[in-house]
Length: 348
Image (spheres, rainbow, N blue to C red):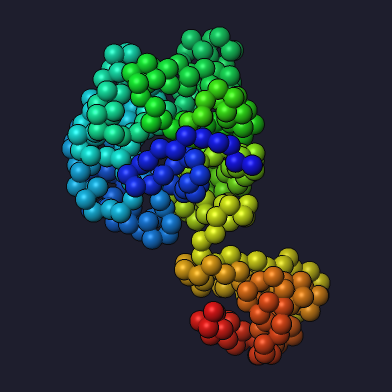
Protein backbone atom coordinates (compact mmCIF):
# COMPACT_ATOMS: atom_id res chain seq x y z
CA UNK A 1 0.00 0.00 0.00
CA UNK A 2 1.29 3.44 -0.91
CA UNK A 3 2.32 5.66 1.98
CA UNK A 4 -0.07 8.50 2.75
CA UNK A 5 1.43 11.89 2.08
CA UNK A 6 0.50 15.53 1.80
CA UNK A 7 -0.33 16.75 -1.70
CA UNK A 8 1.60 19.69 -3.13
CA UNK A 9 1.50 21.30 -6.58
CA UNK A 10 4.32 22.06 -8.96
CA UNK A 11 2.50 24.30 -11.39
CA UNK A 12 -0.53 22.23 -12.37
CA UNK A 13 1.07 18.89 -11.54
CA UNK A 14 0.15 17.36 -8.18
CA UNK A 15 2.75 15.40 -6.23
CA UNK A 16 1.76 13.23 -3.28
CA UNK A 17 -1.60 12.37 -1.81
CA UNK A 18 -3.72 10.38 -4.23
CA UNK A 19 -2.08 11.86 -7.33
CA UNK A 20 -0.25 9.58 -9.81
CA UNK A 21 3.44 8.91 -9.22
CA UNK A 22 5.16 11.22 -11.70
CA UNK A 23 8.25 10.71 -13.84
CA UNK A 24 10.78 13.49 -13.97
CA UNK A 25 14.24 14.15 -15.33
CA UNK A 26 16.97 16.80 -15.47
CA UNK A 27 18.38 18.47 -18.55
CA UNK A 28 22.06 18.04 -19.43
CA UNK A 29 22.26 21.07 -21.71
CA UNK A 30 23.84 24.31 -20.57
CA UNK A 31 20.73 25.96 -19.14
CA UNK A 32 21.91 29.36 -20.37
CA UNK A 33 21.63 27.95 -23.91
CA UNK A 34 17.91 28.61 -23.94
CA UNK A 35 17.08 27.14 -27.35
CA UNK A 36 18.94 23.87 -26.71
CA UNK A 37 17.38 23.53 -23.27
CA UNK A 38 13.86 24.17 -24.55
CA UNK A 39 14.41 21.68 -27.39
CA UNK A 40 15.53 18.98 -24.97
CA UNK A 41 12.69 19.62 -22.51
CA UNK A 42 10.07 19.42 -25.23
CA UNK A 43 11.58 16.19 -26.53
CA UNK A 44 11.48 14.71 -23.03
CA UNK A 45 7.89 15.90 -22.58
CA UNK A 46 6.79 13.97 -25.67
CA UNK A 47 8.32 10.83 -24.17
CA UNK A 48 6.42 11.24 -20.90
CA UNK A 49 8.56 13.47 -18.70
CA UNK A 50 6.14 15.28 -16.39
CA UNK A 51 8.47 17.51 -14.33
CA UNK A 52 11.82 18.91 -15.44
CA UNK A 53 14.74 20.20 -13.41
CA UNK A 54 17.50 22.48 -14.71
CA UNK A 55 20.84 23.44 -13.22
CA UNK A 56 21.21 27.09 -12.21
CA UNK A 57 24.95 27.64 -11.68
CA UNK A 58 25.09 31.43 -12.02
CA UNK A 59 23.06 34.62 -12.36
CA UNK A 60 23.42 34.66 -16.15
CA UNK A 61 21.53 31.38 -16.18
CA UNK A 62 18.98 32.36 -13.54
CA UNK A 63 17.71 35.38 -15.46
CA UNK A 64 16.97 33.20 -18.50
CA UNK A 65 14.62 30.83 -16.70
CA UNK A 66 11.56 32.86 -17.64
CA UNK A 67 12.38 32.41 -21.34
CA UNK A 68 12.53 28.65 -20.88
CA UNK A 69 9.33 28.51 -18.88
CA UNK A 70 7.38 30.33 -21.61
CA UNK A 71 8.22 27.66 -24.20
CA UNK A 72 7.60 24.44 -22.24
CA UNK A 73 4.47 22.67 -21.03
CA UNK A 74 5.65 20.98 -17.84
CA UNK A 75 6.69 22.36 -14.42
CA UNK A 76 10.18 23.88 -14.29
CA UNK A 77 12.31 23.22 -11.21
CA UNK A 78 15.44 25.26 -10.49
CA UNK A 79 18.30 23.25 -9.00
CA UNK A 80 20.20 25.52 -6.62
CA UNK A 81 23.51 24.99 -4.85
CA UNK A 82 25.65 27.27 -2.68
CA UNK A 83 24.37 30.72 -3.66
CA UNK A 84 21.02 31.67 -2.12
CA UNK A 85 20.77 34.68 -4.46
CA UNK A 86 20.28 32.29 -7.37
CA UNK A 87 17.24 30.84 -5.61
CA UNK A 88 15.80 34.31 -5.10
CA UNK A 89 16.31 35.15 -8.77
CA UNK A 90 14.78 31.84 -9.88
CA UNK A 91 11.69 32.68 -7.83
CA UNK A 92 11.48 36.08 -9.50
CA UNK A 93 11.73 34.36 -12.88
CA UNK A 94 8.60 32.36 -12.12
CA UNK A 95 9.86 28.78 -11.74
CA UNK A 96 7.42 26.18 -10.44
CA UNK A 97 9.68 24.82 -7.73
CA UNK A 98 13.11 24.84 -6.13
CA UNK A 99 15.46 22.02 -5.30
CA UNK A 100 17.78 22.96 -2.46
CA UNK A 101 20.42 21.23 -0.44
CA UNK A 102 20.29 23.63 2.53
CA UNK A 103 23.52 22.15 3.84
CA UNK A 104 25.48 23.85 1.07
CA UNK A 105 23.46 27.09 1.14
CA UNK A 106 24.96 27.96 4.50
CA UNK A 107 23.56 30.45 6.98
CA UNK A 108 20.07 29.94 8.36
CA UNK A 109 19.16 33.55 7.59
CA UNK A 110 19.82 32.95 3.89
CA UNK A 111 17.61 29.88 3.92
CA UNK A 112 14.88 31.85 5.69
CA UNK A 113 14.99 34.51 2.99
CA UNK A 114 14.52 31.87 0.31
CA UNK A 115 11.65 30.33 2.25
CA UNK A 116 9.80 33.61 2.73
CA UNK A 117 10.10 34.48 -0.95
CA UNK A 118 9.01 31.00 -2.03
CA UNK A 119 6.01 31.22 0.28
CA UNK A 120 4.94 34.56 -1.18
CA UNK A 121 5.25 33.13 -4.70
CA UNK A 122 3.51 29.84 -3.86
CA UNK A 123 6.53 27.80 -4.93
CA UNK A 124 7.26 24.41 -3.29
CA UNK A 125 10.75 23.51 -2.13
CA UNK A 126 12.37 20.09 -2.38
CA UNK A 127 14.79 19.45 0.41
CA UNK A 128 17.37 17.21 -1.24
CA UNK A 129 19.94 15.46 0.95
CA UNK A 130 22.41 13.05 -0.64
CA UNK A 131 24.76 10.78 1.26
CA UNK A 132 27.65 12.70 -0.28
CA UNK A 133 26.46 16.08 0.98
CA UNK A 134 25.79 15.45 4.68
CA UNK A 135 27.17 18.13 6.98
CA UNK A 136 30.57 17.39 8.50
CA UNK A 137 29.18 17.52 12.04
CA UNK A 138 26.76 14.70 11.21
CA UNK A 139 29.44 12.70 9.42
CA UNK A 140 31.50 12.91 12.61
CA UNK A 141 28.50 12.03 14.76
CA UNK A 142 27.60 8.90 12.78
CA UNK A 143 31.10 7.92 11.65
CA UNK A 144 30.46 8.60 7.97
CA UNK A 145 27.49 8.72 5.59
CA UNK A 146 24.49 6.88 7.06
CA UNK A 147 20.73 6.80 6.61
CA UNK A 148 20.36 8.27 10.09
CA UNK A 149 22.65 11.17 9.18
CA UNK A 150 20.70 11.88 5.98
CA UNK A 151 17.42 11.95 7.89
CA UNK A 152 18.76 14.17 10.66
CA UNK A 153 20.19 16.59 8.10
CA UNK A 154 16.90 16.79 6.21
CA UNK A 155 14.84 17.21 9.39
CA UNK A 156 17.02 20.09 10.53
CA UNK A 157 16.26 21.99 7.35
CA UNK A 158 12.62 20.98 7.27
CA UNK A 159 12.26 22.50 10.73
CA UNK A 160 13.66 25.79 9.43
CA UNK A 161 10.98 25.83 6.75
CA UNK A 162 8.25 24.87 9.20
CA UNK A 163 9.37 27.56 11.66
CA UNK A 164 8.51 30.05 8.91
CA UNK A 165 5.06 28.48 8.40
CA UNK A 166 6.14 26.84 5.16
CA UNK A 167 4.93 23.32 4.41
CA UNK A 168 4.93 23.01 0.61
CA UNK A 169 7.81 20.59 0.94
CA UNK A 170 9.05 17.57 -0.99
CA UNK A 171 11.81 15.40 0.46
CA UNK A 172 14.53 13.37 -1.24
CA UNK A 173 17.10 11.22 0.54
CA UNK A 174 19.38 9.68 -2.05
CA UNK A 175 22.49 7.57 -1.86
CA UNK A 176 24.44 5.49 -4.33
CA UNK A 177 23.91 2.70 -1.78
CA UNK A 178 20.48 1.14 -2.34
CA UNK A 179 19.99 -0.20 1.18
CA UNK A 180 21.04 3.10 2.75
CA UNK A 181 18.51 4.89 0.56
CA UNK A 182 15.70 2.50 1.51
CA UNK A 183 16.51 2.81 5.22
CA UNK A 184 16.57 6.60 5.01
CA UNK A 185 13.09 6.75 3.49
CA UNK A 186 11.79 4.22 6.00
CA UNK A 187 13.08 6.35 8.89
CA UNK A 188 11.75 9.58 7.41
CA UNK A 189 8.31 8.06 6.76
CA UNK A 190 7.92 7.63 10.52
CA UNK A 191 8.50 11.34 11.12
CA UNK A 192 6.76 13.39 8.41
CA UNK A 193 3.98 13.16 5.84
CA UNK A 194 5.60 15.24 3.10
CA UNK A 195 5.74 13.66 -0.37
CA UNK A 196 8.87 11.76 -1.34
CA UNK A 197 10.96 12.27 -4.47
CA UNK A 198 12.79 8.95 -4.84
CA UNK A 199 15.79 7.78 -6.80
CA UNK A 200 19.25 6.27 -6.55
CA UNK A 201 21.78 9.04 -7.02
CA UNK A 202 24.74 8.64 -9.36
CA UNK A 203 23.41 5.23 -10.38
CA UNK A 204 25.86 4.88 -13.27
CA UNK A 205 25.87 4.34 -17.01
CA UNK A 206 22.88 3.30 -19.10
CA UNK A 207 23.47 -0.42 -18.53
CA UNK A 208 24.57 -0.58 -14.90
CA UNK A 209 22.58 2.49 -13.84
CA UNK A 210 19.35 1.10 -15.25
CA UNK A 211 19.79 -2.11 -13.27
CA UNK A 212 20.68 -0.27 -10.07
CA UNK A 213 17.82 2.19 -10.45
CA UNK A 214 15.33 -0.58 -11.21
CA UNK A 215 16.37 -2.50 -8.10
CA UNK A 216 16.39 0.60 -5.88
CA UNK A 217 13.25 2.27 -7.19
CA UNK A 218 11.42 -1.03 -7.44
CA UNK A 219 12.23 -1.77 -3.80
CA UNK A 220 11.10 1.67 -2.64
CA UNK A 221 7.91 1.76 -4.69
CA UNK A 222 6.92 -1.77 -3.70
CA UNK A 223 7.18 -0.64 -0.07
CA UNK A 224 4.86 2.28 -0.82
CA UNK A 225 7.53 4.98 -0.81
CA UNK A 226 7.59 7.46 -3.66
CA UNK A 227 5.39 10.18 -5.10
CA UNK A 228 7.67 11.27 -7.93
CA UNK A 229 10.72 9.50 -9.37
CA UNK A 230 13.88 10.34 -11.23
CA UNK A 231 16.22 7.76 -12.73
CA UNK A 232 19.76 9.19 -12.58
CA UNK A 233 21.83 7.90 -15.49
CA UNK A 234 25.11 8.96 -17.03
CA UNK A 235 23.65 9.44 -20.47
CA UNK A 236 20.86 10.98 -22.47
CA UNK A 237 17.94 12.10 -20.23
CA UNK A 238 15.67 10.43 -22.79
CA UNK A 239 16.74 7.11 -21.30
CA UNK A 240 15.94 8.33 -17.77
CA UNK A 241 12.34 8.94 -18.82
CA UNK A 242 12.03 5.63 -20.66
CA UNK A 243 13.47 3.66 -17.75
CA UNK A 244 11.32 5.53 -15.25
CA UNK A 245 8.15 4.67 -17.12
CA UNK A 246 9.24 1.08 -17.58
CA UNK A 247 9.77 0.71 -13.82
CA UNK A 248 6.28 2.07 -13.11
CA UNK A 249 4.77 -0.17 -15.79
CA UNK A 250 6.64 -3.24 -14.50
CA UNK A 251 5.14 -2.72 -11.04
CA UNK A 252 1.66 -2.10 -12.44
CA UNK A 253 1.64 1.41 -10.96
CA UNK A 254 1.05 3.33 -14.18
CA UNK A 255 0.68 2.42 -17.82
CA UNK A 256 1.77 4.51 -20.76
CA UNK A 257 2.28 3.32 -24.27
CA UNK A 258 3.30 -0.12 -25.42
CA UNK A 259 4.64 -2.89 -23.21
CA UNK A 260 6.81 -5.42 -25.01
CA UNK A 261 7.09 -8.94 -23.61
CA UNK A 262 9.29 -11.61 -25.15
CA UNK A 263 10.43 -15.09 -24.20
CA UNK A 264 14.04 -16.13 -23.62
CA UNK A 265 15.79 -18.04 -26.37
CA UNK A 266 16.35 -21.79 -26.10
CA UNK A 267 17.13 -24.82 -28.23
CA UNK A 268 13.56 -24.98 -29.54
CA UNK A 269 13.80 -21.58 -31.23
CA UNK A 270 13.69 -21.78 -35.03
CA UNK A 271 13.80 -18.03 -35.69
CA UNK A 272 16.20 -15.16 -34.96
CA UNK A 273 14.19 -14.19 -31.89
CA UNK A 274 16.70 -11.70 -30.50
CA UNK A 275 16.75 -9.64 -33.67
CA UNK A 276 12.98 -9.94 -34.06
CA UNK A 277 12.27 -8.72 -30.51
CA UNK A 278 14.70 -5.82 -30.87
CA UNK A 279 13.07 -4.72 -34.13
CA UNK A 280 9.60 -4.84 -32.58
CA UNK A 281 10.74 -2.89 -29.54
CA UNK A 282 12.40 -0.20 -31.66
CA UNK A 283 9.45 0.09 -34.05
CA UNK A 284 6.75 0.43 -31.40
CA UNK A 285 8.55 1.93 -28.38
CA UNK A 286 7.03 5.38 -28.93
CA UNK A 287 3.59 4.20 -30.00
CA UNK A 288 0.94 5.96 -27.93
CA UNK A 289 -1.30 2.93 -27.38
CA UNK A 290 -1.83 1.23 -24.04
CA UNK A 291 -1.28 -2.32 -25.31
CA UNK A 292 0.95 -5.33 -24.68
CA UNK A 293 2.83 -6.84 -27.62
CA UNK A 294 4.31 -10.34 -27.30
CA UNK A 295 7.26 -11.67 -29.28
CA UNK A 296 7.51 -15.42 -28.78
CA UNK A 297 9.99 -17.94 -30.11
CA UNK A 298 8.10 -21.17 -30.72
CA UNK A 299 4.90 -23.16 -30.27
CA UNK A 300 5.68 -23.82 -26.58
CA UNK A 301 6.17 -20.13 -25.75
CA UNK A 302 3.57 -18.99 -28.25
CA UNK A 303 -0.06 -17.89 -28.33
CA UNK A 304 -1.02 -19.93 -25.26
CA UNK A 305 1.84 -18.73 -23.08
CA UNK A 306 1.21 -15.11 -24.09
CA UNK A 307 -2.58 -15.21 -24.19
CA UNK A 308 -2.82 -12.11 -21.98
CA UNK A 309 -1.05 -10.02 -24.62
CA UNK A 310 -3.23 -7.81 -26.81
CA UNK A 311 -1.33 -8.82 -29.93
CA UNK A 312 1.71 -10.93 -30.65
CA UNK A 313 3.86 -12.97 -32.97
CA UNK A 314 5.30 -16.46 -32.54
CA UNK A 315 8.17 -17.62 -34.71
CA UNK A 316 8.70 -20.91 -36.44
CA UNK A 317 10.93 -22.32 -39.18
CA UNK A 318 10.66 -19.78 -41.99
CA UNK A 319 7.22 -18.66 -40.87
CA UNK A 320 5.29 -17.45 -37.86
CA UNK A 321 1.91 -16.79 -36.31
CA UNK A 322 0.09 -13.55 -35.65
CA UNK A 323 -2.15 -13.95 -32.62
CA UNK A 324 -4.51 -11.82 -30.55
CA UNK A 325 -5.39 -12.60 -26.93
CA UNK A 326 -4.08 -16.14 -27.48
CA UNK A 327 -6.14 -16.73 -30.62
CA UNK A 328 -4.24 -17.31 -33.86
CA UNK A 329 -5.23 -14.83 -36.55
CA UNK A 330 -3.00 -15.96 -39.40
CA UNK A 331 0.18 -17.75 -40.44
CA UNK A 332 2.66 -15.62 -42.43
CA UNK A 333 6.18 -15.95 -43.89
CA UNK A 334 8.98 -14.97 -41.55
CA UNK A 335 9.90 -11.89 -43.58
CA UNK A 336 6.30 -10.62 -43.30
CA UNK A 337 5.92 -11.04 -39.53
CA UNK A 338 6.67 -7.45 -38.53
CA UNK A 339 4.74 -5.80 -41.36
CA UNK A 340 1.70 -7.99 -40.67
CA UNK A 341 1.99 -7.29 -36.96
CA UNK A 342 2.05 -3.57 -37.72
CA UNK A 343 -1.13 -3.85 -39.76
CA UNK A 344 -2.94 -5.68 -36.97
CA UNK A 345 -1.80 -3.12 -34.38
CA UNK A 346 -3.30 -0.34 -36.50
CA UNK A 347 -6.68 -2.04 -36.09
CA UNK A 348 -6.51 -1.98 -32.28
